[in-house]
Length: 320
Ligand SMILES: [Zn+2]
Image (cartoon, rainbow, N blue to C red; front, side, top):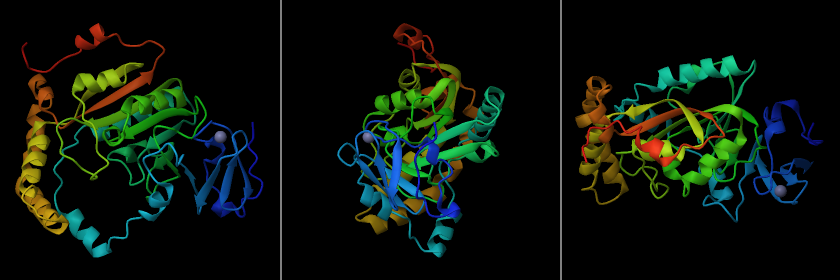
């Protein structure tokens, strides 16, 4: 069914994915009766637009304030961004590129023109460029260079079965209820649709107050229990976890945000090399008990993994 968007003013201001958007409150279709505003044809809720980007957040249900989301555009001076990029990172995400290539291959095998939803990917995810040539709709809670819609993962503004794939990379630790968000991922995927998730386990607080949860390997698998696993593993190992821990130990001595930034930069320069130790540990089962994070590549299923089956997937090194 084509959607009623009668007055979008010019072709260049149109959002390529507008036919996929729905009301985040009731999944009703969206009309565009006035320039700069969308209205749900069912519940009559209104949503603003920033340029071509719709703000599809329920202000009464979301932790994120739509106005704040728009105003949180990164205005850091270019010289500072360049300096930050020169500082080595603490994480060795050695599997991301390979996993995205595999996801891309499976997507192309499943549909001629697959469409992927990237949740929280407004700044561009690690390894996501391996999906080159595949249509990616990106949502986030702040405006980034790749954001196609502002949306909260608890209330995805899309119809059931809208996507062939969903990428949710380093997001589930930042949501209040990861189970609800994964249920939403399941809902917006077509039957047999693919999900790729990366979520931290041993990693310190990041993004300030918007950081709530961590997952062990089994906790992460249970979160996706309504998906058939294609591949699971460490997204970053114990070396990355140790580098993060030492840098944040150093930053714990700070007495203000500026000093914290200096100590974090110092910590990264001192300890980044520890991430290289993830390479010899990448096939070592004991490393699963101390990894920085895990990935899950899976397929939407109607079967739910039983908890007894879940326990059988444990591959760490700890004896009871
Ligand atoms: Zn509605």
